[in-house]
Amino acid sequence: MNMLYMIYTGGFQMQWAIQVVIMILLVSFAWAGEKVSVADLLQNPERYDGKTVIVEGQIISYQEKFSRRGNPYTTFRLEDNGFSVAVFAWGHLGLKDGLRVRVSGVFQRVKQVGRYTFYNEISADKVQLLK
Image (cartoon, rainbow, N blue to C red):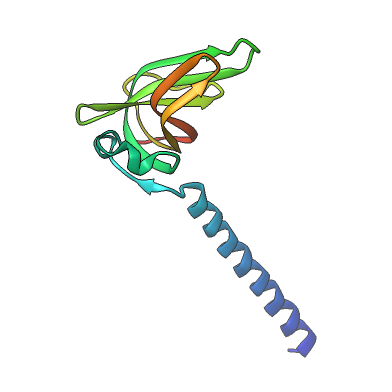
């Protein structure tokens, strides 16, 4: 084989390997956060306040709504082992009560939105349906 061909294919393989590594890192960062139980989150809210958390549980009280400005959003409670935490997400997620999900987002002990106050809520940036 000529040297130019070997350099070309080696460069291609290196580029492909770099792309694979980048994809693995992106997938890892998509779920960046500390995995906690709903019980631990509620029993130690000061520990997780303002931090990204990952929790799993069953959806209850699922609602899709629109803000005053017409923006779609979803709220539900995530229940696990008798404990439940509020979840907020922008957009309509197309889910329903009874489904098991993994939620990643920022937990806040107290959240002020205008004149409304919300307690122990996760602002979800990712919700994944579990089987």
